[in-house]
Length: 429
Image (cartoon, rainbow, N blue to C red; front, side):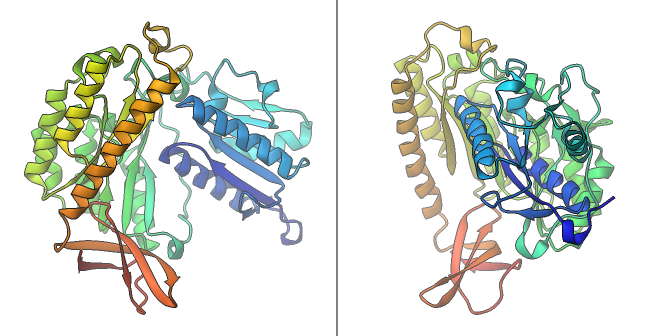
């Protein structure tokens, strides 16, 4: 039963890490809103703090612990909930965590139940499955409402969870479990709801969306269904594995009016020998071929990527191969991460571990190169027309300054006294 308005409790939320964590935190917010909680900013005094944690790198581990401590300090009497990948780790002692409730992956939908259990027991509650032995079905806990479209123009839609790739540096398959896909029907229903609420753009997110497969319907099939059966104006794909970028895939999605020509391909290295040690399953030549197909079927698409600097055993020659390769591709943006040693992974036991100083130095060189490539891509758009979805208004010199993104995810600004919020216009860049 929902609490009386006069007794309304306050809940604050924070997520560390990926868009999947962001999506899940929004769903947990809705669950507590339905239970009568008032949602307040994380830096406010609240009765419940929920942190959706991450463990993709050592830095993510550290941030997750910091946010738990911060919540405890902000209100020592509050209930602190730790959810997600960091607390899913079996090597983490629950007693060492500054929290009252632990919600592992595939248990976040039970947050209301766990809060009630803690309030009855007044001792730490642990709701954590052995994710690799859990039900292989997708945990679908979509609610009927999507939030306030007046403050959002882009909806994130989780379509998949888990990963079967087992890259040598990554713990995510052990923390998120094996790949499992959400039903086409559920995804279409949520997209219909968000478009009815005024959203014009949706972003597919998941741990490994390239492996999407619902009863034989693959990612390209799902995109076609969205284009045919909903009124969505824009569909942006999340991170893609290079191997999915075949001519058939690109040709099919290029025919869809809703697809945004913005493609994030998970590269990780531009050296074939490093890619092999990572167990990525493709070559630089295959990656390059996929980029060529995207540029053949789309007009100047935005190609972005991830790169890990300083993987174990990465020689100076291999690092130079990576720099030469990414420079030859000419990415719009490049997300660079120094290699982070993860306990239990094959890479952690590899010889040739590089110093933090060298990893940071190489990451810095790649970031500088990324800035150059970004500017080159932006310069190529000057004087051309771009379709912009306007999102936000700021006051600059007493004038209304609107900002928004093109289909390629280029951020543009313009001065206008008109209310452009959540409208799409074509402008000269």
